[in-house]
Each structure stands twice: as C-alpha cells, then as structure tokens.
Image (cartoon, rainbow, N blue to C red):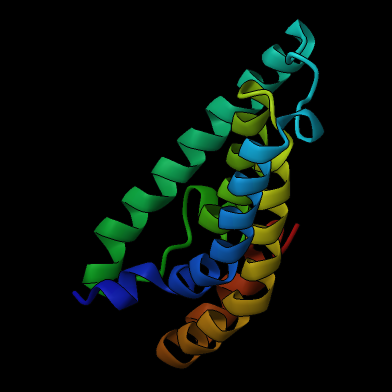
Length: 151
C-alpha cells in the first residue's frame, strides 16, 4: 500500500498548516504573553482533559481503521466514520490541538486547529472525488448516511 493513499489529503493539509505552525511557534516563543490562556485555570484544565481524551481516542481509532481497511481497499463507514465524514482531520483540528494547547497555556493550539480545519475543508473534497470514483454507489450511500458530513 502506497503511503500517499494512506495519507489522503493529510499531506496537503499538513503543508498548508506548516507556515502557520512555524510562525505561530516562533511568535509564541518570542511573545508568550500574547498567547497565554491564564494559567490555565482548573476549570479549563478539566474541560480540556474532558475533550482531549475522547479526541485522542477518536484520532487513534480513525488511524487504526485507515491502517486496517485502506490496504484491503475497503471503504471505511464504521466507528468515527459513521459519525463524521473526516474524523481524523476534524478530530485533530477541533478535539486535540486546541485543548492540548490550552493545557500548555497557549491559544496556539486553537489557532493551529482552525488552520487544520480550514485546510481540511479546502483539500478533503479532492479526496472525496477520488473516493467517489473508486467506490461509486457505496460512497454515495455512505455520504447520505453519515451523521455529520462536516462540522
């Protein structure tokens, strides 16, 4: 199985995100006072952990499904993929990066998460066209059944 197939749009999303990540980390190091979330407070710590834990589980579950099903040329329609069309991208962008950043006392995770989300909205449709071509009617049926096509 080619790595390019396993990664899908992830490479393009990563390249889209990279300049923002580099600039954000540099600015965060140079001007940390502008990125601090205020501690974080105990409430923000608990909220972050409560969202981060399921986010990491969803992310790992999505990766495992990709590693198992894509080499078999199977369309993934179960687990997190039954809930949202792109759980790997959405999970990292909205459930992992922002909340991990808050635990590290920075807004940078939220900012980078929004950039990842934007990148996924820009590049995942290209991936969807390929999936539609490969899986045809099964893809169309899956798209109609998925609970949240996009958040």
